[in-house]
Image (cartoon, rainbow, N blue to C red):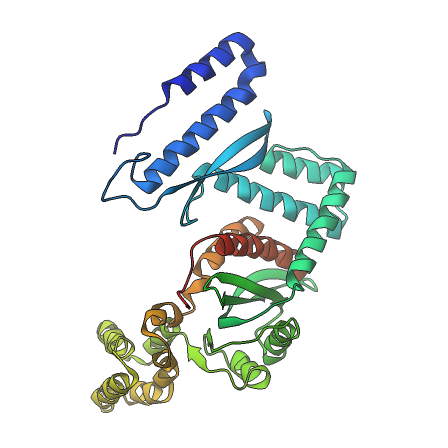
Length: 385
């Protein structure tokens, strides 16, 4: 689809630079960036403004103001919005990462006692900014307060809750260890996604999961109809202790991955995966149980360990058959965590090894807060009416 270039905007930019030279660069850049975002939104929508097009993906929905700090000065941008809320200009992604890097650098200065000169050198390289020691202290304090308020905010009714963990490398007592980031996701009574909380612990042991779940309960988490997660033994034990009456759905994706450890021949792996998918794709519980019985019988002689594992574990992934058919696709796995994990992974590549668990929690907290806000203002995840 051909993009329309606004010639009047180009003329305005040329006139600014020709008349004012370098002093007009900031305003010229502001005009160019605003125009570039409009073009990118049009590409995202796959339709021009007011165009009737069968390929149209969404509809324009006004603008949101944003102040962007650059080496040319502070620019006033009008970020285009779309109705479904799943669009964000690609060049601003870099700005978001810079803001996160800024927060991390400030937090580390606050914790480690790094000199203001060294912090400013990092910020100059990452963000093109210089700040004073007063600004550093104020920003670090605000960051800590923001994360604490978010982690302790009251919760309400959430119909579905997803639990997940990922690991990051952290220095502890002179050693590098894998530190667990425990994250809870919820679908509220309006069908919107939200990240309920996170906790950074030295492992996924039951005591850490139990403490995390108890903190969610103490903040008012209630109304759950189903909890979805992987089958880590510490998590399962903690769920039995804190939410014993809530049904549990084992992530079907992880179940399929776990099954591969019991397939004795490499060329049979895809076949086994297909057999398990057939169980999960059944129309109802009775049909799923019938197919599962057939699959177990098929592998009893040639792969008895696999058959035994299937008999003991696959049924844990069938709880969703007790829930509305149009909800099952969302509830069958813990893939709700995929985007969050990608963002944490992308940023943590820069840090490589966090100097302490608190530093890891600050970065993960900044990321999940931003994503949760986007989810709440975006599309409805499930129709729960």
